[in-house]
Image 1 (cartoon, rainbow, N blue to C red):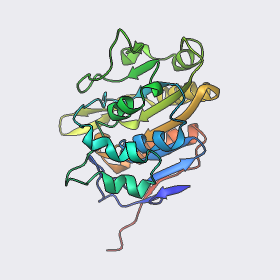
Image 2: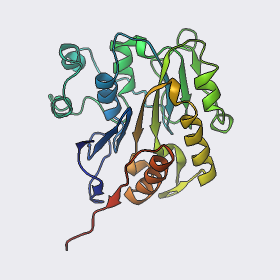
Image 3: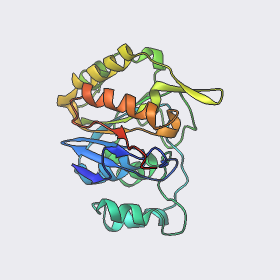
Length: 245
């Protein structure tokens, strides 16, 4: 189901910090070009009174802490607001409230029960804010150590709560000079997706972001997205819209 946009992407469109070009939903899996939409997906898909665990797979921590209580009032008033209303609220004061790097901590602040055990699989890019190693049950492995995602989600959680898996495809890319290179080979991508598939009984939802500017452009992001979606059995195949000029 298309919540916004379509599978034909205009490669001149930008995502960057706060622009959303598309969001697609299949069952409990959401795919978007901008990671800020994960906040809306969690609010709308989850029972906000329940407890969950959190697994974040991303090149970055996405833990910028720059929003005030006032910025979050619109969620307190209506946490289940529709997507268009959510997006319009982002610009109430002329600047984006939620961005691609600050959407986790506001939801944690409002609904701390969503984040019990917390796994951060990253390249340790960005600042570490808002999570306390002593009280938040953190597992923050080096990327070369995390080949056992299914073990972590199935057997090593320490509780019976379902998992939120928050997956940014820029995890597979590194900035190199003036461009980006694919850091992991296809076998590793296949392995990560297989680990997620093997854990689906314990996963309540998956949010996937393309983050094209952090992958070196739409071509790279779409190529990896189509591969990951196929491996996760998501019926989404993106393509570049042909120019009419």
